[in-house]
Image (cartoon, rainbow over all chains, first blue to last red; front, side, top):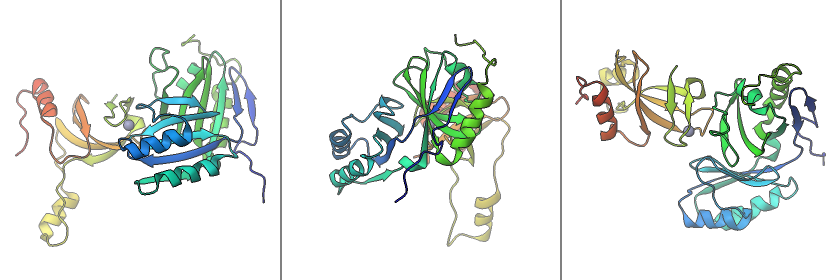
Amino acid sequence: MSDPVTGLKGAHFTGDISVTDAGLIGMISIRGDFNAPAFRNAVAAVTGHAVPETRAISGDATGGLAWMSPDELLYFCSYAEAPSKADALSDQLTGTHHMVAVISDARAVFRLSGAGVRDVLAKGAPVDLDPARMGAGEIRRTRLGQVAVAFWFAERDVVELVCFRSVAGFVMDWFEVTAHAGSEVGFHG
Amino acid sequence: MLKLTCPNCGVTGEETEFHPGGEAHLKRFGPGSSDDEFRDYLFQRVNPRGVHFERWRHQYGCGKWFHAARCTQTLEVFGTYTAQTSEIPQNIIDAIKSRRPDWEPEA
Ligand SMILES: [Zn+2]
């Protein structure tokens, strides 16, 4: 049995902001009919979170539930407990149209922190990052450069970002360029 | 710049967050159709200058398809609506008519 490693293998970079591999995180993709009581009840019972409203995230990458699309949720838990949580979801959802898949090893999670985090993201994501338009509790799926990502504010000036594992190295390289020391923009303050 | 609002997730994004899916509301001609019908279904597109109906996919966002009504000349977007319809909703027709009084939906 090989030891699990993240796509970023603990990479860390500090420039205008700090960019860090968030480490091994359990992630489960859950699909189903959000309007079905059986689905809502099973999700709440196993995850401890109600099905979030459109584009909302409850909690964060250390434990949370995010709205990914009208029929898809992403659940974050500890890496070790993801398989048993997925089994519990499958059990509870038996007989209900659904899909449950552990994707912990198929994604990479970054933790970005620093006062310039909005400016750095704005260099590559076509998103209005004004604090009044993009704040805590919202998950935004978009692109960063030319790869798909999703990010949310875990705290003021702290962003968690998830991408496909296959592009984790590219995303790290992208941050090393766009957040290199001395490239601050100062737009979002 | 072309900005679209995805009716599935509510995000208003610019064009690069989406993927175009071509002309909307095509009627499929498959087995049993004539060669001419099948040819037109595959290749003939209206390609208008002005009001146009298209399919778009929120490729980097929620991943879902939707319909958009827009002007190909000005990039003005009259509205976006669900992909789960073969008919243009009345509120979209009204929105177009308020901006293009001479426009009439095709029968
Ligand atoms: Zn969308």
